[in-house]
Image 1 (spheres, rainbow, N blue to C red):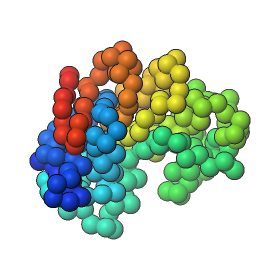
Image 2 (image 1 turned 180 degrees about the horizontal axis):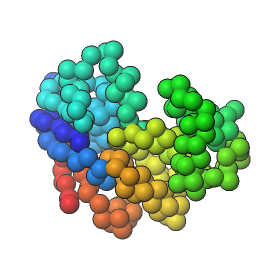
Image 3 (image 1 turned 135 degrees about the horizontal axis):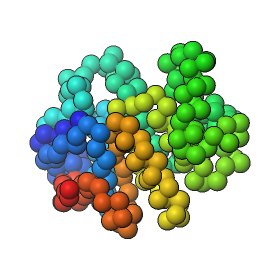
Image 4 (image 1 turned 135 degrees about the vertical axis):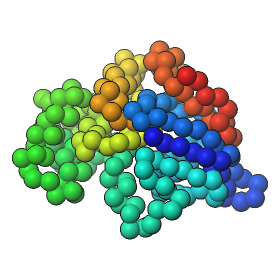
Length: 220
């Protein structure tokens, strides 16, 4: 569950990146976040990931009160999140398997478990046959699915994706969203920022639209 309560993020007295945001995203819900450039989508994600803090108001993610969270608890909190970046951020000198398994290696899981879980998520995103490939030999869609597999391998409670279909054709965009739907069906809360109005219409999910830092519209 993600809950914003009268949340403001201001960089000066007149410039509000977010303005009086009040909303709730239920656990296991699939949500599209929309809005033009400068609407506040990136700041919205920074609030959820605790890479920035509100000027006023409150935000809770699951059992975590991000307003009162101590610095020493941030790393533990962020390990419960999955983040898919627009530019993938894959390590070019590592194979698909090595890229995907990185979060579990950081957490020092046993190699047997790491390999088993990596195999599962690569099958989920349709990349089992790319196990030993390097990123440079993958298509854009395959790189994106690799990034998704890396983001979900540790079974995060919340998955955030910033424009994950921005550079993909409509057919591949639909396949990528299908993967996110499968992840959501396993209990993960999914929040996706996108400019693709046609994709949003086809999928008919809950949609939050930001404009000038405020919630302009919220459907479903």
